[in-house]
Every structure is written in C-alpha cells, then in structure tokens.
Image (cartoon, rainbow, N blue to C red; front, side, top):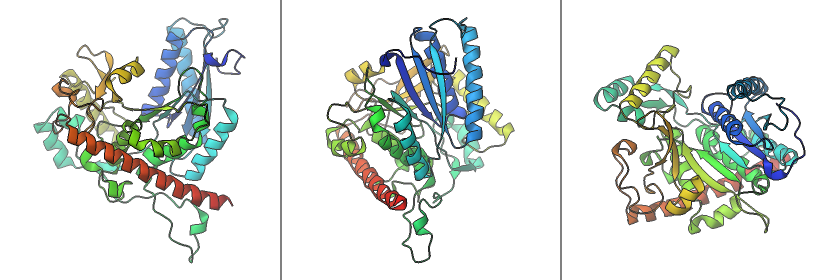
Length: 412
C-alpha cells in the first residue's frame, strides 16, 4: 500500500532517503530495503522511502517500478496489501542535481519542512566520468592477472579537469570575479552529498530510537595512490572517480576521531539535547552497471567476467553492524558472496586504516579480500591517516563555508 500514514507511535515509522535511486545500485538498494522491511517488520511498522533523481520523468518511472516491486514481493511472501495492520510502505520522490548546489539546498529546505525526522540517508548518487577503457592494458591485465584485474581495475579512462556548470549568476558578467572551480565528479560523488547532509542535520538528529545514520557509498577502487590533498577535487587527476571514493573513505572513517571533532561539529551542528548522527562507509562489491560507458554487447562480456571471477573464489562479485564497530572499530563494509554463493557482508581493508583503525586487526584477512599492494597496518600509517583525515575535514569545511557564502549572496 502506498498512501497516507496512520497515526501510530513515532518509533514505528522509519524514514529512509536514497539518492540516485532511478537505476543501478540505487534502485537495487531501494528494492532490498523493501524486501527486508516486508520480511522482518511487524504489522504496526511503516516505512517512508524517499528517493531522489535528477528529473520528474525519472522519478515517475522509478516510483512505478518500486510499486510493482512491492506488489511482487508481497505476493511472494503471501501478504495481501489490504490485510489489516500490514506493514506499510510509502514512496516519496524528490528531484535534485548534486552538481547544482542551489538544487541541493532547495531539496534540504523542502525536506526540513515536510519530514519529522530522517533515520537513514544513503548517499549513493554520483557518476564516474569514465570515457571508456584502455583496451591494450585491459586485455593484458585480464589475461595475466585475473581475477585481481577485474576486482581492482586500473585500465579505465576518464576526462581530466571536468567542472560543473556555473553555480551563481553573479559570475556571468565580464567584470565579475572568476568563479571558484568545482569538479563535477567530486561534486556529484562527495560535495553535493556533503552539502545535503549539512542542510538536513536537524532531521537526522531527530531520530528517536537510535542516532540517525549517514551511509556513504564508496568503492573497492578507492585507491590511496589516486588521492592528493593538494588536489582534493581531483581536477588534475586522470582518476577523479577513484580519488573521490578515497576521500569518501577518509571522511567517514576519520569522523569519530578526536582530532576531527571541531570540523564534525561545524558540519553537523546540533542542539544541545540532540545526538549526532553516525557515519558509515560501505562498498557494493563489483557490479555491472552503466557507470562505465560501453556498448551493450561489451557489457555482457564484462558481466560474464565478473561472474567467472565469483565462481573461482572472488568474494566481491555480488549478487549487528553497530555492535561489531563498537568492539572492533569503525570500518568499511562491503557486499559480497561466500564460497557457497550466499550474500554476505565483509569488513573491507582500507589503506592507512586497516579493517577497524587498529594495528594488527587485518592480518587474518583472506588473500582474496586484500588488494595485493596493501600491507599490514602499522602505527606510522595509522598516524598518517589520522592527520590526513583532519586535513580533509578542514578542507571540506573551508570549501562548504566558501560556497555557503557564495550562494547566500546569490539569494540576496
């Protein structure tokens, strides 16, 4: 049933927002949320699933597909939508372009006025900026280094220096100062989400049962070598996507460290009696999506390679978290499969952080769950990661304040 909510206790109403939900991973996340909700929640619970896309047509099509998925899932579980007190699911579509900061701020204002709280925001939207593959390198890598080469690829090609369209009209005149550059991949994958979360902190801190959750979607391709603090937007990098995902890892994993708290408090301003939302980072494994622009026939070849990698033992080719993080430290969570091809969630090793930010905890990871170039975490690497985390948070807050001022002057 998709419709008006009944007045029940606030604790039984769950509010979840998923960005970039019109296809690929975002749509799959929505379907999985629906499946788990129908399967596990009691008849008194309800779920409001808020999805974002860049346009009304995409929103309309996605809502239609999700309604059909709800119908098929309920039929599979033999649950009739008119059964009294059945768990209810409500779908809400919003539009936002993460590369247009005024669009992000407009969405923030709308959500603040239309929702009582937000339990979870899943920051999925983004794009790769890929232009294709370096075919000689790709063929050689697959032939000589399989399945590692399709788990941690280094042969994608992408544009360098791609920026967003102008964010403010006051920079349009000939005598206006030059507009600060804003990398499009950086903005869609990190900074647009960063601005969105900052704008809806009151909703995330209103979650009553548990602290609100901010879930950053990263990647297995978040290579340390692709990121530079002096080029935090990746404008000079030929690996801007991978750089943005490395930055995502750094921000999320360092968000609980004492050295980053001055910047976290500015990013997540709270009333004195509210609890701060908790930040998580995850990666979806290796998925065959349209993030890489290839001919449809080649996509089947890619999917076949992924499936074969899974058959020969790669855990990353896909089809109580808080308690673990409390005991073993904050980590990057990954979607994978077991040797019996069952869905599983694994801790993912991050260079400079290990699996939980604790020296010695990553030594027992199976070889097929570790990039070959990664070494065991040591004290020096851990200290360097903490320093890098603080510097990244400082840079992000400086950038947010700069653009807040620019957009505020635009409104005035």
